[in-house]
Image 1 (cartoon, rainbow, N blue to C red):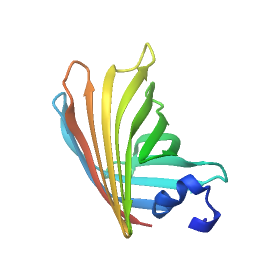
Image 2: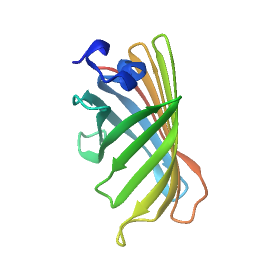
Image 3: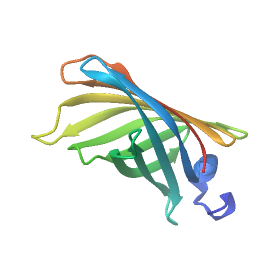
Image 4: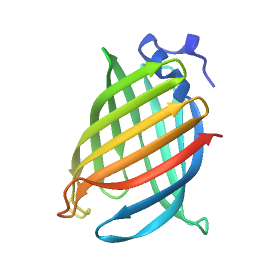
Length: 160
């Protein structure tokens, strides 16, 4: 794992994110049954002024549920950008803020979503990640399939 000293200067505030995080989550949405899952996210330094991101989830039996990948950019002045691609036919351009103090980093985003013609239609999303020490809480809301912005996912993860 890279150290803060090895990172591009703009990434130093988010250096606590580096590594793999894993834990339990729960999901709900008005159009589906509630569910539980295991989530894993990984942030990797690739030697450029952005971090590579990979997310995976599994159901209670270990069957894969979802995955996504992308890039976290920290342009400066407290702004953050997250570009995410999903195999379900969506691409998210998330823009928001980063607040870093001590061992706590909070990222908050709203997004513009592009949908392929065969994908379920997602209008917009909101993502929040709060990293504190060796734990992170991730929440995700979306406006999709005719529903207004609604809470969808929450995961509590620990550094793996």
